[in-house]
Length: 242
Ligand code: FES
Image (cartoon, rainbow, N blue to C red):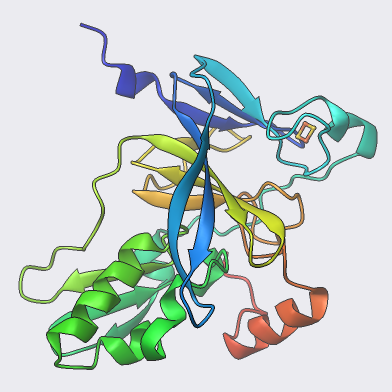
């Protein structure tokens, strides 16, 4: 029997699109907010007909989004992959709670803002209240970019949703823009140079063409240059790891 999961892959084309193979489901989801205006969840907006192979726009300028229509060649898109190739865990800062450990690799942040409710995840993990701990777990598991991972200190296991391999186009209604491409369920991503990035349960890829951490999203789809600068200063991201 053919294992379809083995055929699944996202191949990055140099200065071009993402070529998706292996009949990976493609959906669109919208970010919803709570009464205080904090982002809370993602809900289905649309499911695209299943295709064996398709190419997703990476430059942000296709007239046939989310699919590539060749515009990247007309605009001279520079899609150079600038992220460091270190594994997630080597990039991450560690924050300790009594029962929970948070690992946080800032450079992956797609700015979906799920970690800010109820005082924020870093405070929530310090609380002994089961409700706070449960909220921290939910916030980590929904973090699309995988920037945040929460670990059970007793078992050493991470809290992760059991995703079927799938690709979600995030629609950020609060920021009035399209968000990143959410890759779920451990789909391999191959660089234009042929190497495979660390395969993870959740990552977000840039689809506006502006990220400074390509191929990953860095929030540039809605953050101004000034906001990005402040963010980079806050987290000490001006020096890029090699
Ligand atoms: S990557 Fe081809 S049109 Fe955007």
